[in-house]
Amino acid sequence: MKKGKHAVCLILAAAILLSIVSGCSTPVEKSTETGVEQGTDKGVEAVKTDFTIATWAAGTELKEFQAIIDSVNEKAAGKYQISVLSIPSDYYVKIATYIASKKTPDFFWLTQELISKYASLGAIADITEPFSKSETLKPDQFYEGVLSSAEYQGKYYGLPWIANPMMVYFNKNLFDDASVAYPRFDDDWTWQAFIDTAKSLTKVQKDSFGNDYKQYGYIVDGWPNIETFIWAGGGDIIASNGTDVLIDSDATLKGLDILNNILSGGITPSFSEVASLGTRDVWFVKQRSAMFMGGIQDDFERRASELPEDERFEIGYAPMPVGLNGQASSFDWTASTVMDINLKDNALAYEILETLTLAFFEWKVAPPIKGTVGNVAKIDPRKEGALETIQIVLNQARSANYIPEWNEINTFLWVRLYVKMLNDTTFDYISEAKAIAEESRKLLANRKQ
Image (cartoon, rainbow, N blue to C red; front, top):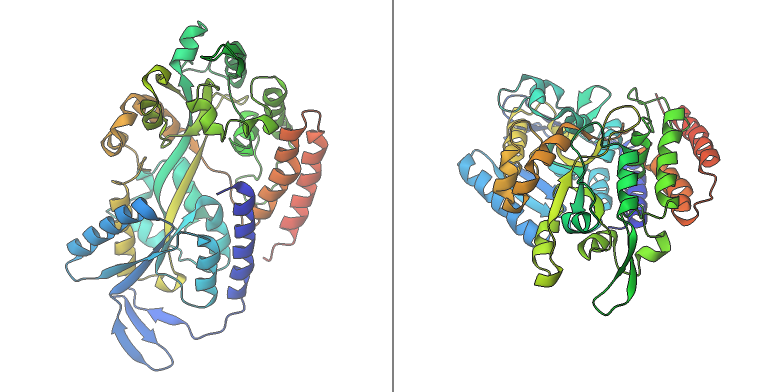
């Protein structure tokens, strides 16, 4: 989904969610121990054993998902039954509509930036107590940077089932042809070293017909996200306390300097040029960009192997560069399975949540728990050569400090800052960042306490 369309969908979903606050229908109470439903209007009791999970999966992915659910149901041996609700389009708008109409799926997926919004509106269950007491799946088993994405105001609202932190993919053939050393796995692999490497790989080449074309060292077209560059400077958007805005901090502005140096340094195609070849990943596959920052589950290995034999190349892997604060940060896309607020304290529902999560760990790259990086190669054997790098970036995995107002602030940063930097390397990004910071502070000041 394109970023602009995604933002519009999230705004619409947020508007629908606000209707939850004014809802006044009779609540459904559920027993802590047995999953008993008590319709308080009629006084009728029934043990809840039928549950629904919503997913955005479609096509082949949906078939795989259904197979997982079928297996879970079979092992449950009648103790409970889970049905699948597939929402392959406008997922968040439809989820918000279900919630507003009091027809919330028992379980559903949320990406990291939405946990705080849904939690603040009282739409999803706080699972802190059963999660902390569990003997099956404990908080300290997760990579800290992944688990934090399911946390809001010190409480847990979901179980992450996937981790997809970024790493640097590079074309070994282009490095060898230019006699450029491969990226190092130490503190010398800084953002400046990354930029210098990209410069060494940016040159004019000839195609098979003798025509000149530009080979770039790297490509930026709105990806990686702006957090990646802000973290490179040691900055952030929102502080970990969830209230302080850091967009205009010195460290954040230094991170934007790094982004501007990349955009104005000639090492990436211009924003307008990217579409001439296709999407950003196509530039890497077609060997027009020597490096690419992508998630660990990106399937460049398959795509490279399917090229005509004379166009194939060997892929190398490197961790994210070290920032000005001496730390490397790998933005992690992740998703959690959450529970309907009406299932809070329902022991059976939480048991199902754990069971589903453990099953998902066997499905996608990469499981978000420590000590399982070897499973990546079992899930996708083509990732065998990347395991060392994958382990490093899992340890460095990081999400932003998401708050209920995140979508609005992120839209400011995308529309008013990042897009303008992409289109105009002389744009006064410092002044705009300061203006966005002030507006973000006003936005947070209006938050209902």
